[in-house]
Amino acid sequence: MTAPQGVTYAAAGVDTHAGDKAVELMKDAVRATHGPQVLGGVGGFAGLYDASALVGYRRPLLATSTDGVGTKVAIAQALDIHDTIGFDLVGMVVDDIVVVGAKPLFMTDYIACGRVVPERIAGIVRGIAAACEVAGTALVGGETAEHPGLLGPDEYDVAGAATGVVEADALLGPDRVRAGDVLVALGSSGLHSNGYSLVRKVIEIAGWGLERHVPDLGRTLGEELLVPTRVYATDCLALVERSAGGVHAFSHVTGGGLAANVARVLPAGLVADVERGSWVLPPVFEMVRTLGQVPWGDLESTLNLGVGMVAIVAPEAVDGVLAHAAELGLPAWELGAVRDLDPLRDVAGDSELVTGTKGVQAGAVRMAGSYRTA
Image (tube, rainbow, N blue to C red; front, side):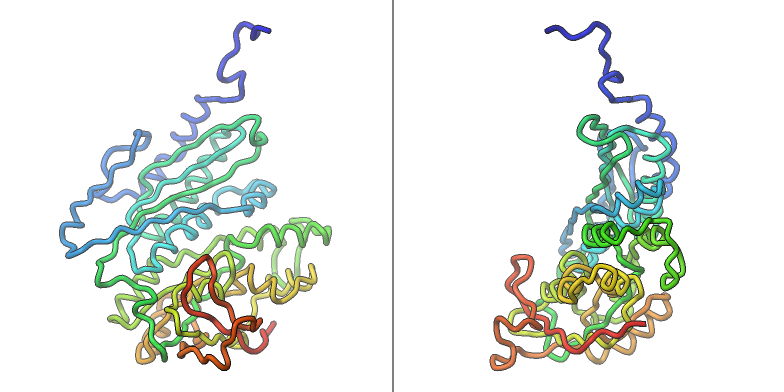
């Protein structure tokens, strides 16, 4: 059977002219993230970044990370609001880099969609660019791919990758952590971008619409679910600089929850005791739990529960880190402390002890006490 005459790429569902229009609509926002280190303009085959500054490093280590927004994009699509999830993307990517003390230098993004709607694509990229400005990161390139037949006309997914640099002797991580160090929590802005499959299933079963006003939240359900991820990169780097070596490690609390992610940045033989009662659970997390009758264990291993980043700090530096966080407008509090593993107390199979997560054989976290709710 022969194809009908006159079949075009547009007839197959791909509109290259719409892609060109999207670039025109977004290019000013992208350029706003460019400093003198970025060469060339928007639309090139490759983004160029002048790495001359690395010559001043004694031993520069490049750090890289890639991630996506996940099923939170379904909320953006349902509400037809697309200029906020860029913060979710940038936060998920650059804040993994800052964990090792690296300054994020540049980022690229990738958007796959069923149909290019220029205004929608430009809105997504404007959000990414705005978040890059907050993170001090150049958005040097990206790609929009139209996948008709694979994605619905109004469906899309977003991913990105970033590269940063850290001086080798300034590298943060498990090698610096010692017994006696203190865990300082940095508050999240809400759900961030993890656990939305659980959250969406809960509201689906409950039959709640996104337009529903929730008194405990002070806004509609949709508004709460679309609150952008807090981007910590600039603030974390400032905390490191101000602490003069007092910050030993960071943990970015994403998939797996608080305990699993903190355990990843502890050396074997150390345990962090986390006191659940050291903060008040933000209302959205209690809403998810009660509405879906979600077990505490499942909630704790899925959502950030109000802690988006953890700094592991030398005890003598804690007061300074808390004071500087306050100056930055960043909610922060003491979450717990690090100690040596006790073979009699910290035994395998204890439901309160989390270890061996993400394939990393490192330290452990013991959760203690009960959460406080508003």
